Length: 127
Image 1 (cartoon, rainbow, N blue to C red):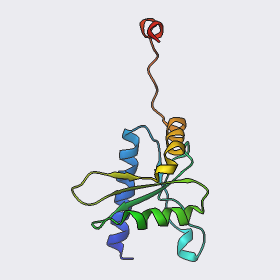
Image 2 (image 1 turned 60 degrees about the vertical axis):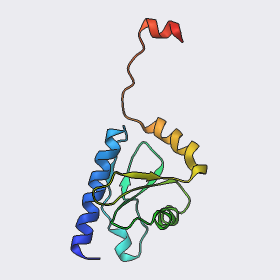
Image 3 (image 1 turned 30 degrees about the vertical axis):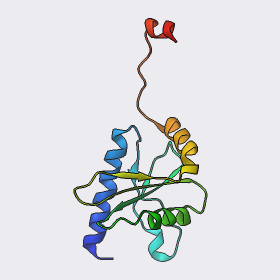
Image 4 (image 1 turned 180 degrees about the vertical axis):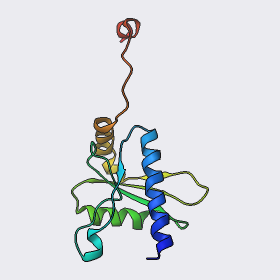
């Protein structure tokens, strides 16, 4: 992999962390070292409060099923897999298997770092 490809991947992962932060998911980029020497693979970004394997792709030609297959293989079935992807001048897309949606939502609710506003008395009475 060329240096420019690695740099583009790094920029994409950092941008993905910013995008996830906007929806209340606090995460950080993981530096990939182990895979170069035949060790285990790490997710591209890690959200400590969510048990989700994040695969980030910042490429011109999107191949979502290949990306999801990579995430499923790399996670070894231990986590819910999510692929965050985009090409230039296009919005970010999130892909998960429909069967994983309930687990993903549960993980999102558990890991959401946004503070929910307290309901005032008038809202409590209406509930």
